[in-house]
Image 1: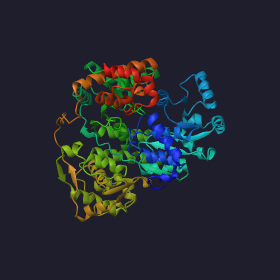
Image 2: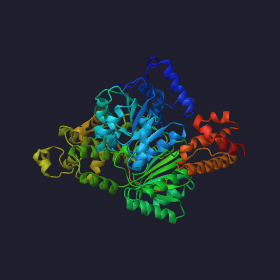
Image 3: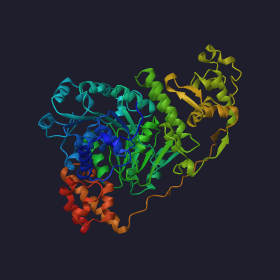
Image 4: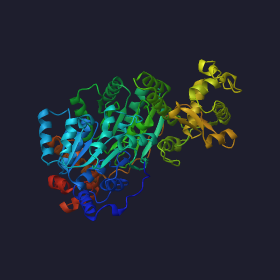
Length: 609
C-alpha cells in the first residue's frame, strides 16, 4: 500500500488535462473539484491502481465518472444495489452521458437492448452487479470491447473485515488478471485501516495508491442519549423538528412498521422502508422521500446506500448499530448540503445484548465473529465516552481530532468521577496475565470468578484475583471499554481481542495520568434549540419552493428521482443567486451543458416570474 500524495502534474498529458477540465465543466457543471477529488481523478487517469476512501457526500461518483469521460472507451462500474445502479444511470443520462445498467430487476428484452448499445460502442458507462460481471460469458464479451476503466463502488464489500462483507465481491480480484492493462479504481466511504489493507491485497494484489480524505463531517451535531422509552423519545424528537426531512433507523422490520405507524398517528408524514416490503412499495416510498420535503423515513439499514438527498436534517438511531463503520456511514446521510444537521443515537445495554446475540447466531467463521465482536466493543466505547465523541469516532478511523464543540459531550460535559484506582487495578491484571486475554477474561479475574478458563491458567492465584469483587463484571467491562476508547488499551482483533497496554495505559498505571468515568445522572431533555443554518429570506424560500415544484413535475414526467434533475444545493444556489439568463444559469454549480439545454428555459421561467 503506497502513501497518499498528490499526483505530479507531469503524469497527465496536456490534452488529457484539457479533456478532464472540459468534462468537469460541460457535463457536471463544476468549475472546480471538491476537496480530495482531483488527486483521485488524476491518479486514475495516470493508470495507477487506486483506492479512494471518501466520506459520504464528498463526491465519490465523480472520481470514476469523470475519468470514464476523459479516457474514452467503455467504463464498467461494479455496484451492489439495483436501485443505486438505476439512479446513477438516470443521473448520467440526464447530464447527457450515455450509460446503461444490466441487472436482474430489468426484463430480458431491456437487458438485451442495453447490451446491444454497449456492443455498438454507444455507451460510456455500464453498471453491473459483481455476480453478473464475473460470469465467463460477460468477461469474454467485455474482452472484445475497448475497455477504458473498471470502477468498484462500495469496495468495503470485498473485505471480510468490512462491515458489509458480501461474498459475491470476493472474485473481483480476477479483474486485474482478465484486464491487466485496464486501470482499476475502488471507492468506499467507510474502511478502517485493516479493511483498507484487505481491499488492497484482494483487489490490487497488494499494490495500490490509497487516498484517505478526512472523515470529519463538522456540520453534524453528534449526540448519544440513554434509551428508556424509545417510542416516546422518537416522537418527541421528530415533533420538535417539524417540516424537516429525517431518517429514523430501527433494528427490525417490526419496529420500523410500529414506529412509522405511531408517527403517522401523531400527524407526521412518515414512511416505512425495509426488505419485507414489495420492491414497488419500497421504490415508491424512496422516491417520495427524495422528491418531497419534510418526510421522515423509518427504515432498517436496507435503506440509505447511494441515497442522494442533500437536505436530510437529522438521522436518529433508535437502536445502536453494530459497528462504528455502520454508524458513520448512516449518519453521513445527514447534512450533505453542508448545512447544520443532527445525529442522535438512543443507547441501552439491551441493544448491545441483542447485537452480541446476532454475532453469536450468525453462521460465519470464528475469526469473522471475533472481528464483529471487536467492532461492537468499539461502538459501546463510543456510546459510553466521557471525552469528545467526534474525537473518539475519528480516532477509530486513524484520524486525530481535538475536542470539536459540536457533540453532546463537548456542549454539555458529563459529570465524571475519578476512577484512576479502578483503572490501575484493571491494568495490573492485564499486565499480570501477559496481555493475552480479552475483557471478559480480565473481568472474571477481577470479580473472583472460578471459571474453567481462569483456573486452568492459574489466574485464580494472582495477587489481584477477586480484588474488584465489590462491583459486577459488567462495570469492569465498561471500564476496560473506556480504557480502549481513550487509547489506554489496544484490543488486538487478530488475537481474539487481547488487551495490550499502550503508552497512555502505562501512564495511568504509573499514576501520572488520571482516568475518569461518567457519573450516573438523571435523564433530562437535551437542548433542542441547537443553532441551525441561517434561514433563507422569505422571498428566497418561496422561490426555492417553486423551483422544487418544477423539479418534481419534470422528474415525474421523466420517471426519474427528483435529484437527478438538479440537486437541492443547485436549486438553493439558484434561489439565492437568481440567475436571469442562460449564461448566468450555466454558472450555477451542477448546471452542465446537457441540463442547461434540457431544463434551462423551464427553470428560467420560474426564476424570472
